[in-house]
Length: 216
Image (tube, rainbow, N blue to C red; front, side, top):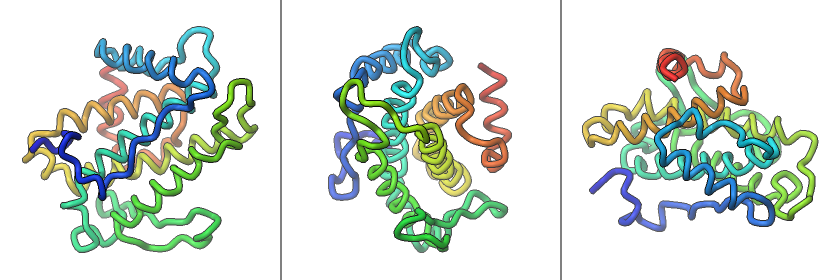
């Protein structure tokens, strides 16, 4: 079984993939992403296409990266459990607590799988909220859209940080590290291109991120 093979997924443990916003240029932009990724040029794949709206580009990529991280962590559910990962950590120095500001206002300590579950539910709610991610052509994005996207990417990064610190040896043993690394390179180059994550937040994987940026 390939760790990232999707044909034999247990449908009960995977939430369905989100589709790009349909009423706008989402489908066109998704085709552009797929075409540029297919060329193997990650630097080109993250750049804002000429003449396209920045918010549209951020929106369709937010959906894409949400799907990637959702699938990546979903394939690790057998190994990332409340027993193996009682806290959401990225090495001994970094621990993440969950709060969404609505249902859970004060940050709480939860296991890594519970944190990811809360996170994916929270992101899905953001993506489904048409006042944040408008579906209809011509509907403006909200003034705080950039901040919403930054918060989503900051939290998605924490899943990558946890995977690398807590589960990388398992991924290596399954010979799936190349796929993980490609996904994270794409994520890193995109967030770097649009300055979506503060440098301090990137500390758990700083060396890896610097090597990616320097190599591109």
